[in-house]
Image 1 (cartoon, rainbow, N blue to C red):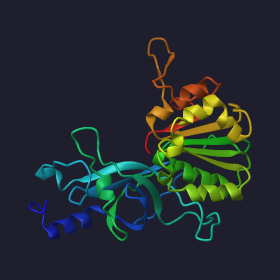
Image 2 (image 1 turned 90 degrees about the vertical axis):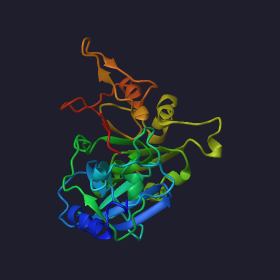
Image 3 (image 1 turned 180 degrees about the vertical axis):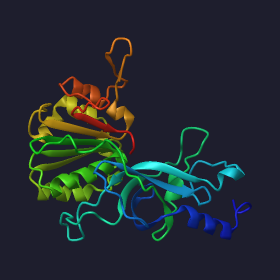
Length: 312
């Protein structure tokens, strides 16, 4: 790369394309990060659950240990962008629920993708994970998305089901509900491989102590205690453990379920264009299990009580 771009050229590219600063970086481990980004512009009005865009130029360094990348000279001056659901800090340094809003930064919860599974190497996260506090980057000026709390009424139960960093929008939503006095049960479940993959674990445990209507249920799949007794989110539903944690039956009339993360966990169905019947992917996902219980997914502009997000 140095053969094609001089330090002066790289500096000019950064000046031209970047409009935000990384002001806070927390890495629970080498492949997981919580990043707070402060833009040069006023943060636009938005809703919990929506997503923004981060970007870095191909001229930036990548962390070692990732899939080898092959770029043409014309690619090196391009900015790589990707949509990420917004996370949100929940507690302040004193362990109290954050009350100030809006904040002057956006929080992102990101996992390092080392291998893409295809010939094209991951472009953005190996560069994001090379950043240090104070470094510059691109932040999209638009925040959008339909994955919001708009359908939730004060009398509704809310369930958040996620895998990995799919927990990000649920952090924002949870903070918003508690901050604005939601009284009905809120249950958040997050399934990861190892305990170290839960960057917000202590925060959610603290919330469970602070709010009687909030419950957090973390699941791991690759810890020693999981041998022979691995449980996924689908298993929580079929075994009745989800209702046990919730403290009441799953009632479609008064419950909204939010799903974000691994597509295999979600299991988004499609309608057969000829018959109009739902077709479900395999293995069985959460959407199918909930529909068997009387829930209905969002479909176009028709809002149901199962909501899912593809950006995570």
